[in-house]
Length: 299
Ligand SMILES: C[S@@+](CC[C@H](N)C(=O)[O-])C[C@H]1O[C@@H](n2cnc3c(N)ncnc32)[C@H](O)[C@@H]1O
Image (cartoon, rainbow, N blue to C red; front, side, top):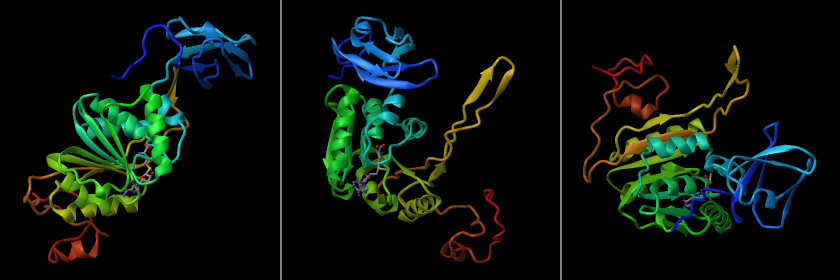
């Protein structure tokens, strides 16, 4: 049973302290201990028993807001082996890859376990997440991070140290791939997915994006893939001085989704004119057509 801490702070809770400049520190509460900042120490006992959202003052007189970290805070500051999926993309994956409570999800690779935490929280204790990670050292980091986030093993999680293609699964509702060459695993994903299931791939570069979309189309047993990225721009709001922040969370990666068709069904040919620069093979498929770069749908 997963324990989601709430109510007054207790020993073992993770706490995030935020100073007046917005700098954050993370600690795990332990009776009798002190947390040392460059503005003096904070006694854990001053926090234990206090409600979340309390203020604690360090020996140097600095006031800190004390809150339990959100998953987005945890995911960007946890120990890493591989690069993690950023919260803006994890939120899109959970929402637009339609990860639902009770879902059976396959993930590869687990990397540092950041996306595993998001997926496990979305499928809940009634769901199943099987995460593949071929590097044992990364699998160890992922396992430690997931256990730290949930305060122990998650009953719905199975971490397999090995290659995704060795899965031998055939009942997945969703397959989520965050690895270098998703196009190499499209056929394996199709075998794992039930009819109507969804594949979601997260890639960093346009070359990976193009190869993945092409592989999904060429496989034939998927719907036309959707591809997009999300840019997150904060806004500075101070009286009438309301403007976009100068810095933003810009490009991190692209997301690609497609639905698995029923067994034996092949997607009808696309009725979209190939655009200028499309692969030669694609252009040759419709020799008489205008190749003027239009992306509009044929009527
Ligand atoms: C970018 S990391 C994943 C990060 C992870 N999504 C997170 O948020 O922490 C990619 C991982 O995929 C693993 N990987 C690559 N190909 C794989 C395969 N065929 N099967 C299993 N794991 C694989 C790599 O070892 C690496 O750890």
